View 1 (cartoon, rainbow, N blue to C red):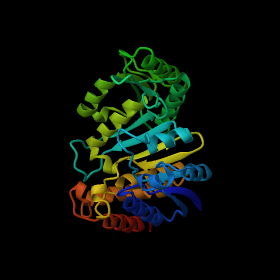
View 2: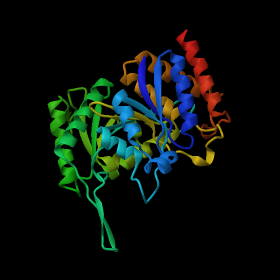
View 3: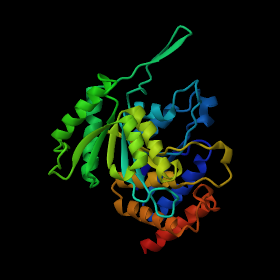
View 4: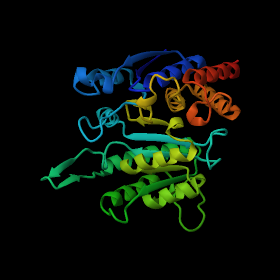
Length: 347
C-alpha cells in the first residue's frame, strides 16, 4: 500500500483525477490517496491557493499527483506550481513527448524528453519596478543548479536507452548566465562518460551536443525525430515543452514530473479549462500518463507498462476518444474503456 497525496485542482481537475484514480486501481496497485485541496477554491478561506497543509501532506507522503490549478494572471499569488517546486526543491521537470498511432499529428515517430531546470533562471521570482516606467526581472543561473540538472539528464539518457543529449541555451547572447550553463553541461557530461560530438562520428553510443534555443524551436518543428533528450534552463523548457506538445496532439496528452532529492510531484500541465468543467468531456490522458510516470517512480513498472500499452490500444482503435481527439466520448467513458482493456491485458 502506497500513501500518495492527491491534489485535484480547479476546473476539470476533479473529473480527470477521478478518471486517473479509476485507471490506476484497475492495474491492481493499492494506493491510499490523501486528498488535499489547493487552487482557486481555497483562496478565500486561506488567503492563497497553496495552504501549508498541502506542503505538509507531500512532505509526509513524499509523492503527489495533481490536476490543473488556476493561478491569477498578472496579480496576486505567483504560481502554485512554482511555489511547490520551490518549497520541495523539485529541481527537475521531466516531460516525455511521444506520438501515438491514432492521434492526429503531422509526425509519426517522435520520442523525446524535455528536461528543464525547475528552480531558477527567469523564474527565480526576483523582479521589481523601476519607478512607473519599467519592470526588471533578474535571471539567475548557478553552477550547483546547472550541475545537478545536467547530472539528472545524463542519468535519464542512460537509463532510458537514448543516444543524444542536447543542451539548449542562448549563450551566444547571454554569455555569462547561459555561458555558465553550457560550460557546466559539457563538464558534467564528460564526468558521466558522455562526450561531445564533433564533426566526425563518435565511438560511444551516447553523445552530447548543444543548440541555440531559437534554432532548437525551428528544428523541433522541421525534424523532431532527430532529438532524444534535451536539457535546458527554466524559461526555455517551459516554452519548448509546450511547442513539443503541439507536435503530438496537444497538452491534453502530455505528462509531467517534478522531481527532487526527497519528493516528487506528477501533474497534468494543461489548464483548468473552467469553460468545460462539470461537462464530463475533458481528456484525462495527460494525468493518466503522469500516473504512469508516478508508478515507474515507485517501482511499479509492470502496472505502468500495462496502462501505457492499453492507452496505445485505445488510441489505435479510435472508438472511444474525447472531443479534443476527434471523438465524442465522455471523460468517464474513456476511462472505463481504458480500464476494460487493462483488465483484458492483465488477465
